[in-house]
Image (tube, rainbow, N blue to C red):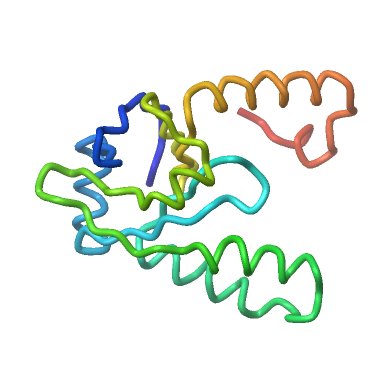
Length: 150
């Protein structure tokens, strides 16, 4: 559903404008409502439509509650989840706390991940890509990846 890399700006009120094709999908699938939360591992935010978010939330809630990894994911992902609505100009207001946690500044990158968007500060996005390139050059390719044909 959400594909592509989109460079957008964070306005003075903390809003980003979503690309038209994606805002139309959000309006169709979840009446313009989305859920924003922090990524449990990376310095970015996640944006889901309501139906997709409900599936994620259900999966997380099925995990064993006393496991420290589960607690971490639950506290970060579900604990920071915030319902937001697209305005008439296809903008979504990112709450101050979430902007702060993701270190969002003026230049933002929306990275489509299929069922969600990752929302990155542009400089952190570029650093993350470089870091991933360095890590993958130093490690063996996992078998699951070698089985992938493009």
